[in-house]
Image (cartoon, rainbow, N blue to C red; front, side):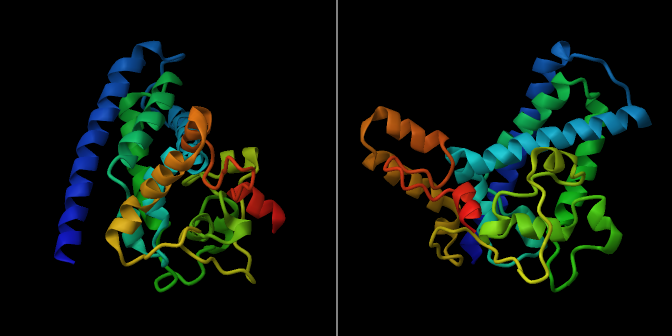
Length: 256
C-alpha cells in the first residue's frame, strides 16, 4: 500500500506538470488562429461553456472509441465502486491528452484564456462531485436537476459496464452534446450500475489496473497478421478484432 500510494502521488504530480505545459503550449500556439475574439463577460461565458462541453465530449468520446486512448482512460473506469477517490484514478498521460484536445478546440473557437481557466475550475469542481458514491448520495438523480444537467446518476451510468449503459453520457455538466449526438442515457430504476470494465481484471492489483489494457493491446498487436491489422488494433474501438468477431460496446449495446 505504501508503494501504491507513492506511485499514486508521483502519478498525479507528473500528470499535472505535463498537463499545465500542454495547456500553455496550446494557448500560445493556437490563440492567433482563433476564429473570433471573446472577453471575460457573462454572455461569452455561456458561449465558452458550450464550446468547452463540446471539447470535453470530443476528448471523452475518443477516449472510449480509440483503443490506444482507451488504454489511458481505462484506469479511471477500473474501480468497481463509485466514490470520490475515483476522480483521481487516472493514467498519468490522460490529463495532458485531455487538456491538449480541450484547450486546442476552445482556443481555436475563440474562448478567452482567462475565461477558459475559470470554466476549467468549475468543470473540475463539478467533475469531482459527480463521482460521489451511493454511500453519500443514494439517489444521484438529484430531483429536477436530472433533467437539466449531468448528475452523479448520469455519471454512474457512464462508469457502468452494463451493456445498455456502455459509452454514454460523455459530457460533464451540460448534457447538450450528449443530446445532440444521441449518447444521453438515464439511469433505470430496475437496472443498477455495475462498475468496472469488461476485461477480466484484478481490481486490487495496481499494475493490472494501471497497465493491463496496454498489455492486452500489445498482445493483440503482436498476434495480428500484417501491418494493417496491427495499426487497426491501435486506432479501432476496444473489442475490435481482425477476425470479424467484434465485441465492441456498440455491438454489446445493440444486442442488449
